[in-house]
Length: 212
Image (cartoon, rainbow, N blue to C red; front, side, top):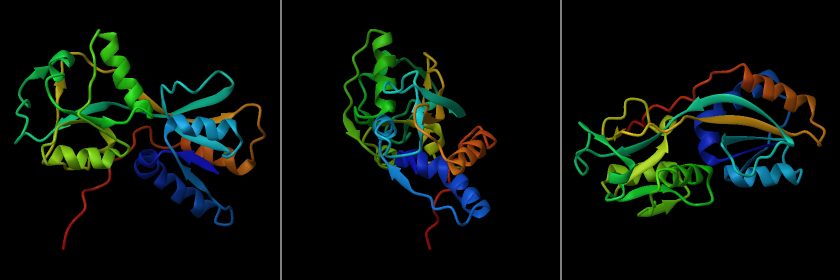
């Protein structure tokens, strides 16, 4: 039983679930979707065997066994038809004058960006806060603002959106697989964790959808 956010499930876990199911077809797999912050609570309550979460995660403490399975960067993305900033570097301070689209405050991504702004003594007041990275990308495409998303969410060959170049480099984040040291863990869970550890270190964005 795995806990993970919608984004992590779609953009990272699906290939591993496929591999695991192919290798162990008789082992039932259950996935519970929740935010990375809430997934820690599910693990603490014994409702899941393991979680895959963004890191840093303020709800994680030292009692959890944490293993990094990949690293990624977050990016600000925009449609050049509405925000012509492609040929320049932009500071976080200057981003304050643009409409920022981002995940809501119940997410580790929101925590991360608010902390980055606070580190530079800046206030972050987003224009729109949602619970879906995919919807943020859709809204950036139609010019409602500049969206903040993990880089692996952008479809391969994306042509409508570009990533802004910042004067202040944002540190990378990680995806980690976590289980509770105080709870027994099944052999199936150990096998899945090993599969994640031995897999690719970079999540892959899906190819853009084609229309008939």
